[in-house]
Image (tube, rainbow, N blue to C red; front, side, top):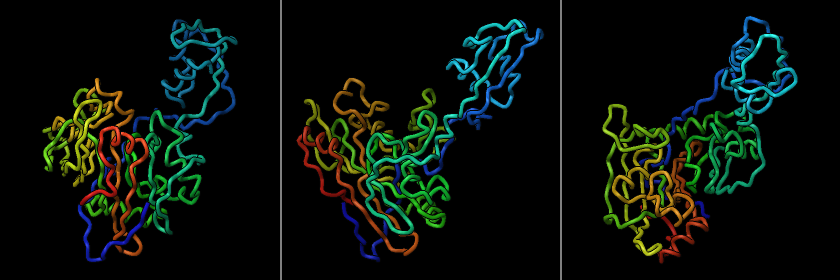
Length: 349
């Protein structure tokens, strides 16, 4: 891994980042800021006779959401006359119900956790991390712990005073490569402005099925998929956001007897899953992409073959251009070797 300072007269191309810089809440139950506390004892009365247990408890303990109470019942944290209750059981109105409140999963979100981090560069203002595939960047539903944010808070406790522990952009869980993290609020504000102004340079390497043309540009707006909310899609709807991807074919090979191509991608915009969606829209899905790829080809690689290999930005304190490169991780390099492709030493402009 290397850190270089290019010629100060050299301007950085437009930003390219894999996910929107605007973070989206993933839907946490309201009223769930609970911590484990003393048992709540409820003596039911005849007026609730014939009502489902979850409805009764929800009405008597309104500080917790009904969905959370249902989870507690299903997990055995609500007893009726000393026996575990069930969500749909009918009450008679003379039972003693004991509720054991449990902490909400999202309370783990901003706890420090010790984990190995590949730090490429660090100074008083920023940290550059080489994120491995499989690491979630920011806590969200289904991943309230074990994220990069948790690891950052352990290694740099002062980041607790910076929104989102200094994270200004994200990579997908199964995308590897370079990310920048701000150590101060001032640096974070500056980096967010650079991302919005597209003066951050981030370039990717992607292995796709097939043989795209040597170079080109995809200028296709994107929005949430109309039927599958997990996915993004090329769209002409009024809510679709502009999305532009420049690509260049770097090498070709064969993987499991099928043609593949190593692509260099540069983004002018940063929509969620942009590279994956744009390449798929051309008919060249990423190798290993279980969400947008060809399902019958999944055994070839256990994740999408996508690496954020080059990062360039204006240092928020010195004002000087800085640039970093990350070598391909071992699994990606082995995949290229299987395809008969030599791993590039750097990503071309």
